[in-house]
Length: 374
Image (cartoon, rainbow, N blue to C red; front, side, top):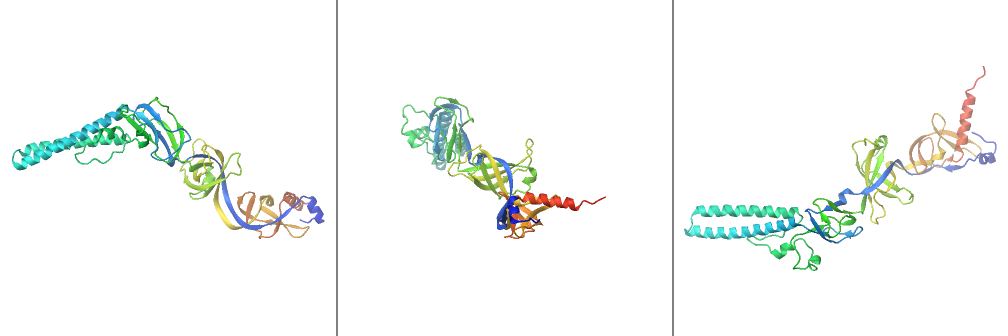
């Protein structure tokens, strides 16, 4: 393609730039949404029905694992503690009786049958004690070790599981043994609180949501054809809608094994760091996944590559007025740039802006060359 003068090249709006060698990645794009990391997310409910005595936190508060969220007054808790105390007392009493019978049997004052019966009764009491311990553990209590034959203190049992900062403020004469502490299972932020003091609550109903927001999930919805190019470990970059300069990056950690029946897309999940808490759950945006990367590729602006009807071409500037059409093989495309795998060397000048004028002229000449007179 030859122009009459360098000025005519400028008048045609043709601008050139050098092909350069630089890293480039082939990317897959998709719509995505931020969510909580569900391995660091907890819905906390009461393990027994009762009424709310105290609420210690509000939505937005930061908590540590084991911090008290609320106190529930539950009759079931008082009953479980009472049964545990009775069982421990029975084990202690039957243990003493067995030791006395052993001494008497050895001395010949009692027969062996009495000792066997007493030992069986002790074993039954120990089983009942074990069951009452399990009931309290199921309610969320941690029981201190109990020495053989020892009986737990009724006062200690009444305040079982309560932090010292709370017990110091409780009225010893009015505090019942029914108090069930609700504690945070992890370090994080209280996302929601669903109770107030005096409210009646049911067992198992979520009353608080606590989440560790220092790491979030980004779930992208990919077309099945694009999903085939994605693998666990690849880098994903998320851009929130409306905040183009606020990019966050992470690694793909999971890919769905099925196509969603409604959206006909494949779900892909990445973990992203969020130490400053700026990435918010349920934010929509776009995801870019780098599926391949070339560290030293010949790269040109995307507008330099034109389609002539049969192949991709670029126009290499030979001199101030001449451009040569080169058929090229393209690869990765990223941020408005294209990898040229063959047909072009780094450093060559290629037409960018106005290259469509050259391809139009090229196609016109092809059509002209194909015409014949009747």
